[in-house]
Length: 631
Image (tube, rainbow, N blue to C red; front, side):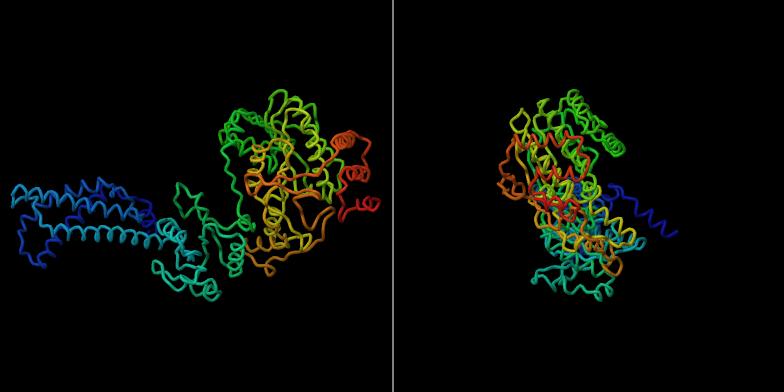
């Protein structure tokens, strides 16, 4: 019954008029106390004059509090701004009393109700500030004490004793629904260590030991440092995870809602926070001009990249958005998602990029002006065993969509490529490289500007390593890594799609845009971090099994092919690969021959033709290595 009663209290808010009445009560009490202090706690003053002056003081107080709106504040959330408001209101009240007293004396009305001693007014002012603020903070503390008794409290440390740490402290303290209790700060700055902030000690990271955590019942740490170096974040989280602590992080200030931080915005550290580089942030006002009032077509729209491009394109005032994919179920899910968002002028079409006639019909009907070609087969081991399908979709599909784009005078065609196209060691990468070459061959053959974007692995995409590790962790492992030294470049899906949209805006045709993705990450280390992020220990709780390289798999990925270098763009993270010269006519004819020869059905024959086109394609850990020995 008591818990239910306390719960009911915690859900109710006092009327603003009740708060005003409460404040007026304090004003009356402090006015009487001011008289007592002025006369050394002896009633040697005209008591009836005091009683007659009280209505005037009440009216002046009402005017003051209504002017600043202090009575509208929710007492349980009293913060710094509310305290400032109370001080301003108390000063307005004192000013009104002083002005009326001055006028009364000017008019020589000595026994006027408005004639209050100046010393009493100033004593009253100080008492008002003290008691009004004290009462609000007392009620806030009492409320927090009561509500804390009916919920489980998690004791936390805040990493960062600077401005961001203080804002985090205030956000948590002011959130009555939060179950967090801050018991201290951690900081790297030796000048702050050992000092106290709001009576809470600042600790050195080395002081946070297992013994310390157990003694103080610490549950988690909130990292509240703006613009923290990702490598430092990785080091800190690794140390804290190893102590069995949960770790949360305060978002960048630009992501705070209306410039204010709330406790609800503090989230657990995600694997993308540990990429080892700063997140990519692209802000280009020209993007609206590029996409507004245009028909935008996206192939592979049900995939991880295609669907995210569609979501971002949906933020613009497009004329029509055409989503194409042959994955019926996934495409249906995207359609339902967009319907729930209330997006209009969207056409969802089940179609295969290998069917050129069907693609031509779609272009003829909707007349798109911007095309994002994301349709492709991307799984390296599967394509190694199915080179015919890799050629059919990755090369033939790209050729079909690109040819139709030229025919219908599409303004811009953006090809989504991969770092696996660079010095390829597998069929998938080689076919994507040929797709890059084909759109290069089309430069200048129509009005269409062909643009290629090339980036690394995308965190969380369908079939990528992150979802695989998550499933393996759910089953309590082991996590499988093909090689202990294998490294990959990583980016988030939103980052990848930002790059694609930006490339489409800045591209003038013929460019291959590559992305500065920082340092590559060891997949083994990524696996360890994911285990720790899950609150488990490696290898005590979950082990990691080395399975050996898969057919066609590289240990190290590259972003530039042999003979390529880069030139800068206006954005420091985006560069243009300056490709080596190719014989366009010869290359185009070879690609046409490769995609039109139905007689090539044997894997060795197909891969042999691919290698003839891509001399840098050297198979790795694959049955096709026999073809390289003949070179």
